Image 1 (cartoon, helix red, strand yellow):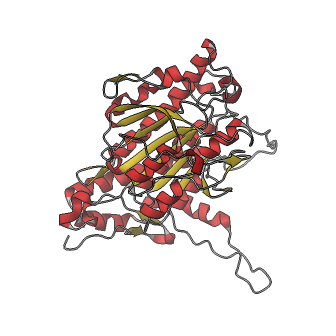
Image 2 (cartoon, one colour):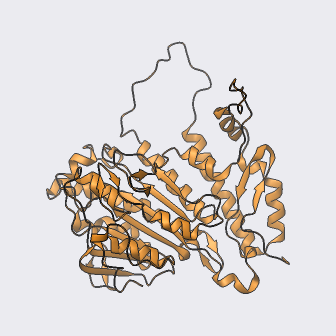
Image 3 (tube, rainbow, N blue to C red):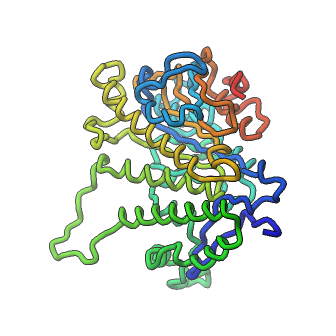
Amino acid sequence: MKSPLSRRTLLRGAGGVAIALPFLDAMSPRLARAAAAPKRLFLMHNQNGVVPASWFPTGTEKAFTLAPAMTPFEPHKSNLIIIDGVDKQENRDNGTAHARGMASTFTGNTSKDGFADGPSIDQPVANAIGAGTRIKYLLAGKVSNYHVFHSGPRMMIPPVDEPKANFDRLFTGFTPPAVGNSGGGGPAAQNPDMAVLRARKKSILDHALEEYKRVSAVVGPGDRKRLDVHAETIRQIERGLDASGSSPVAAGAGCKKPEPAPVNDGAYAERGKANMELLCLALACDITRVVGMQWTSHGTAFSWLGVTTLHHPLAHQTGNAGADAQLTKILTWHAQQAADALTRLKSYQEGDGTVLDSTLFLWGNEISTGSHQFPRAPYLMATGKLLPTGRYLKFNGLPHPTVLVSVANVLGLPMTSFGNSGWQKGALPGLM
């Protein structure tokens, strides 16, 4: 191509559909392509702590063995930084341990009743690296009584748990027709069902197929391959969402409103997996550069793993051999979801590398163990090229805001503190 393709290029088709493109070589000047990939942040949060023996490795900084629950990361061991010896800070006079823990994980701040006294790290990062993206940040998952993501003091940001809603926000641009007038001369009301009906009428990619072919024809073979992978990934996610949302065409006369579905009906796993796929694709498409996933599992029984006790009361039995075995199953399952995300980010080619090369993944938990302990908080980082990786880093009781300051520094923000002023020790020494 004679001139770079705009990163904001969208494939537009009938019905107002808009499909974002992945980051392509053709989007950067020829001489700048090696350094063109934008930096990105992926936050993942869990509840109820870990079984330490199943989480923390054994060995030295560069010669370590992954713990039992972390075996899903074995293919990505060289991309990991497992952090040990960082203590979650808390203000014990405010709310429950779970409330304090959730609110502080990514804010590094005090809290009351599950609301943090400052923003989470995704906010300053999004302001710094998200300029020009269509969505500044995308947060998925189920809202809890206590809150992880915040835009400011006691200003929680609710994640969106419905994958279809997240899919539509990322990949469609509908303007539903008016269905009436407010009666007072104001703007006409919008029919919220029209967007869904139009989205299901025809495949999103089919709408934009002609423009997709046009762009594919004028880029190089490497970009053409990325476009093909991108298109097929969107199709797979779209088909999965359609299948999960299918319903009978007509209901019989005996149809009755069912009782509320139990929490452990599989929705936790299905929605979580779908949302993790969407967050990865959102980064690969450069629709946003900051994403977060909030796994809310207090009331979930992981029946598909053979665990029938709800996660919260089970976590309070940490230290009991039987409970630890069940909790390790739950932790392993979540580790698999994180490892799958790393695999997916590696599958997206970008320049001479992959999307994971320029992405910093951070996994945190509200508490250290289910018995409301805060020392030795479980934090894990992963990236391709933003940091020296393949390391097990041990510290001696550093406050957890050091992790958040380090995240900001890796992504180009020159912070020396973040969160509560009394919990500051700078960044993690030796990380960068």
